[in-house]
Amino acid sequence: MSVETFEDTQKAEVSAPKSTATVHRDVRDTVGNARVEDPRIRCTDVNVFYGDKHAIQDISLDVGKGEVLAMIGPSGCGKSTFLRCINRMNDTVASCRVTGEILLDGEDINGKHIDVVPLRARVSMVFQKPNPFPKSIYENVAFGPKIHGLVQSKADLDVVVESSLRKANLWDEVKDRLDDPGIGLSGGQQQRLCIARSIAIEPEVILMDEPCSALDPISTAKVEQLIDELRQQYSICIVTHSMQQAARVSQRVAYFHLGHLIEIGPTDDIFIKPQHQLTEDYITGRFG
Ligand SMILES: Nc1ncnc2c1ncn2[C@@H]1O[C@H](COP(=O)(O)OP(=O)(O)OP(=O)(O)O)[C@@H](O)[C@H]1O
Image 1 (tube, rainbow, N blue to C red):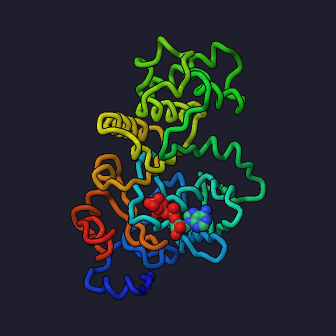
Image 2 (image 1 turned 45 degrees about the vertical axis):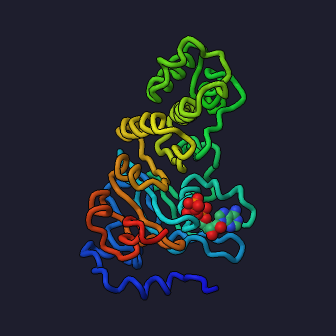
Image 3 (image 1 turned 180 degrees about the horizontal axis):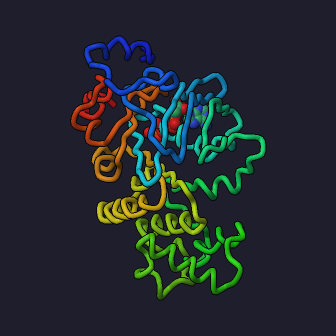
């Protein structure tokens, strides 16, 4: 059985024209402009190793303020691994080593002085499977602000809980049962509760790893609408297997393949006129 390598796939893509976007030294072979003018996150030459396995190779990209960046690509191409670099979740994997530079508002998140607890409050994460704490709806949202010392009084906490649930479009559905267990909500409500929990700690960036994959179409539509509202205030990176979802919620798309960032650009450009053959093969369903 032959194993496909990145070099093999490069041989197959020569028919596709290269982007005319400015090629920076640090964006290597990525097609499209990976940089934005005023980035919230700036990643440069990020590599990730699990032991000897080189899972992410020389990835450079920016995440802008007020945008949703969708990360797409076939299973195992490294989307989640890359996403998890942005709030140092990979620190929890013993075999994992990350190199390169990741700046949040110009500050190196891997710097020696950086404490990961406040970092993960600034860069919060919503997972594939809703994971409310085994606490009440109220406490699920109140927990973060309390442990991060964001509130001084119960009255302040009430305000944060209500405003976070409102921003997550969940308040009207739960306002009369805030003391009920969070795990008693439907799957879609639980995911919006997890988003409310993220918002309550005043993040700058929200990372979402396939946040709708466990949800029905109606719940998915509600979460997608929420993502669109939230981007006014936060930078959002979303990993998704659904190209329709990427097209609906994002302003820019990054296409990953075998640990490389193949192409990045405005969502319409990626879906209507992809520059790289690998991107085109993926979005037309010929691959992946
Ligand atoms: N904890 C780990 N230890 C070793 N290898 C890992 C670990 N996590 C991921 N990998 C490997 O790193 C590569 C990238 O995996 P990753 O989960 O980031 O891909 P993905 O694009 O998010 O996949 P999917 O779409 O299936 O979730 C894969 O080859 C995977 O097997």
